[in-house]
Image (cartoon, rainbow, N blue to C red; front, side, top):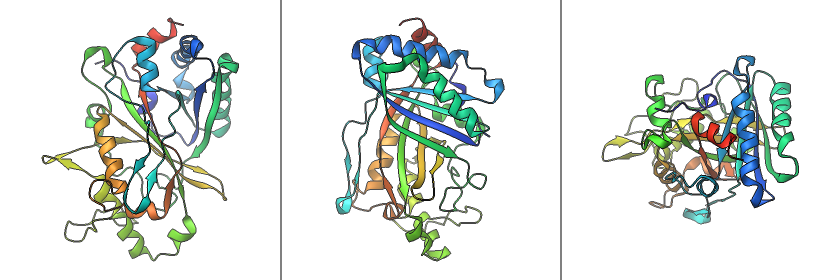
Length: 300
């Protein structure tokens, strides 16, 4: 299998800087991606810095002529009760992770310097670790992730060999209404999630509400669990805050199915968490393997 970008699995970083970029000069796409790829390849991860580079699927295919078995997030997902998830697809996604916010900030600035006026920052998000591994709601995040031994199989493309080690990422920014959520009692909050708050024990089937977050996102097809690899990050300040949802998979279809289930598009049952958290963005990115990054770095 090809070598994945190390930041996908690099846990333990507490500070994050995430930017989504729009290319202003389509003809400069190759040189712009080459500059970013070179920066990512030369980044010294022993310094505690990690960078994951994602590219709009249609853009990557146009630049390389390599089919990636992924599509852009090109249209909103319309669900039950007029609920909608927006499509805000950008061209390039950069996720910087470090042990301190100043390191993440400096790394982001350094990566963007060589591309200068060729891109526009569409969205910038500052993330940080909250109470170890919890979302701002107080619930543990990522409990549905596969064991370490299975993470590569879930997150990374294995076939065809040309794409081995690559991945497909879903990136969404969800803004929380913590005042509304905090007005619920702990048992009521647990009904929203479908698991206990202190220790994240999932409800039994006979106790699980149909609209619970766990019920809407833990999907099976033909008895097989459609696992994804989550690396979500809390973001924001006292006025505007929430969760930057980041998930990696080898199969975009399971991400699309999860979003449709959350929205209530599949059966009219909307995820209860969407009554307290509003999606502000939505994009898919192809995350090339280290080998494909090396090819990009010399192609511009």
